[in-house]
Structure formats: structure tokens, C-alpha cells
Length: 96
Image 1: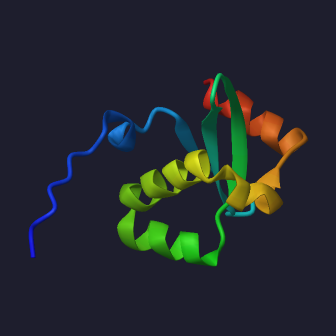
Image 2 (image 1 turned 90 degrees about the vertical axis):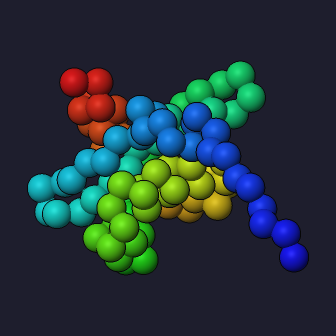
């Protein structure tokens, strides 16, 4: 058996492409700036119970991982994508 040597890519440890937001009702959302070939767009997801558990236990690391998952496997989150006024409000907050 051999050890596997991993080196993190810069985009794996950069957190300037996602924002964590808390709604008035206490719900936590993540806004991710996704990239698909030459197009970029924002994706807003409400954290589910498992993601909230990870966030409370692992903090930044769990959110960084979730943001990368959303960016790379956005199709897995299609049913959970939030659009409309809530997405627009999240985008505006992220630009402050």
C-alpha cells in the first residue's frame, strides 16, 4: 500500500465565491457563484438538517465543501434551488 499525496487546488480553499446568509426565521442559506464552462450564475440553497449538523460540527470546512459540491454537481441540487425574490435579495446582500 502506498500513501496518496494530495495538494489542495487554490479554488478548493478560496471562499470568496460563496456567502452564508441567515434569514429572519433562523434558516441558513448558501449562495454560490457557480461556473459552467463560460457562463457564471448564482445558486441559492437552503441548508437541510444534515448540512446544518455538519455546519454546527465542522464550521467553515463543511460550508466550503458544500459550496464546491454545489458548484461542481449543481444538477444534484436542482430541486432545492431557490429563485425569485429570495434569490435576488441574497444576491443584493452578497454585494454589500
